[in-house]
Image (cartoon, rainbow, N blue to C red; front, side, top):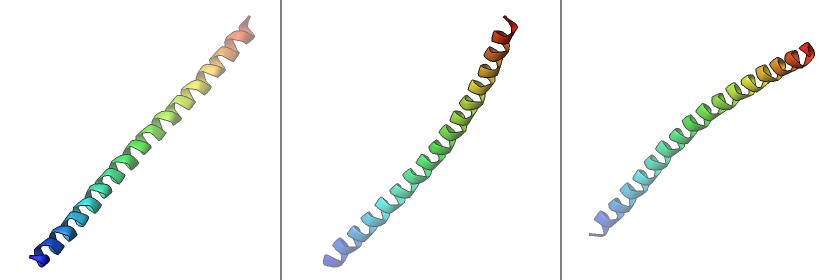
Length: 59
């Protein structure tokens, strides 16, 4: 009986570790997606700033 409990504990720990690994992978992918989105936002901001500067110079 103790062997079964020990095995159950080990399997439970392995499952927890596997779930944590999956969550870490998901978070890394989400982080990368958000990083790319942030960079695109920065590029758009720079582009708009140049356009505003151009329009102000036209006045």
